[in-house]
Each structure stands twice: as C-alpha cells, then as structure tokens.
Length: 183
Image 1 (cartoon, helix red, strand yellow):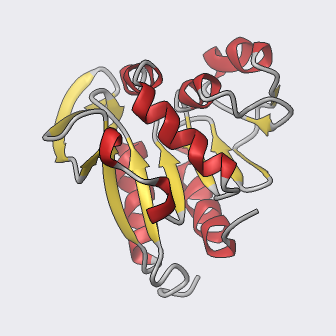
Image 2 (cartoon, rainbow, N blue to C red):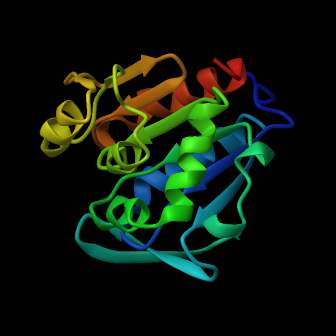
C-alpha cells in the first residue's frame, strides 16, 4: 500500500462516548498513514470518552459536532464500535442525517462491531450484505440486511467487520475502498 493512497482525502470518524478505543485508533492511524486527513465528528463539541471493552480509556478531542458537519466536505466515513457509542449516535438526528448523506452521495463507509446500529437508524442497510458483532444480527436482518459472519465484508463501498480481531483486514480494506472513491 502506497503511503499516499489517500493523499488529499478527508475522512470523517463519527463517534461518541463509549467508542471502543482500538476500533477508533487503528482505522484512523491506517487512513492517516495512507495520506488522508482524519477528523472526529461527534454529537457534541468537546471530547469523547473511549473504552477498552468495559473500562474507561483515553479521551479524544472532537473536531466538529455532527450538527455542524457537512458530509459533502468528506470523502469517506468510518463508524467505530463499542456498545454505548452507536447507541448515542443513533438517537442523535444530526448524526443520523450525517451518516445518511454519505450513502445518498455514494461515498464509501467503513463500520465495525456495534457500529451498524447507526446504519439501521439511518435506514441504509436494506438489501446490503453486511457483518457486525453477532448480537446485532437480528437487528440487521429485521432492517433488511443480509447478515454474514465473515471477517470483512464489502458491499458497494460499505466495508464491515465484526470485532477488534478483524481490524487488520478492516483497516486494509477501508483504505482500498476509500482510495476508489464514490460507488
């Protein structure tokens, strides 16, 4: 992978309190290493509290609140997991609007673990092949998705993975899909 694969691209990371730290940090490092600029978008300004499973970890400064974020300013979106994080996001109308805008524009999106809860709320999984943390299977199927238990799944620009163990494959695939651009 070239160090400049994503040169000039802006990648939004949408996350809130409760984000699984490794699912935010590793994909962000991957896109930055490939030359992209990454920005943290959240439900409110300030900072978010990450978790390492159920334990508090580091905090991260928010670059822009979802209410002020314009999906048109970004080339791709990443939705990290964690249990509380997507629950906060899916109840925030601005965060849901932000997510839906990426799909409306055909821009690539990466999502891991519990992150698809926000996709369900944005009504963008119907007819798509996707994976997630196993407990989201029923939610995704009920929302019209075709759920599979695979390390990394790509469906027309949507990259999904199940858990932190899948991060090497997930990070490589999002860089590839983000480099391809709109689908």
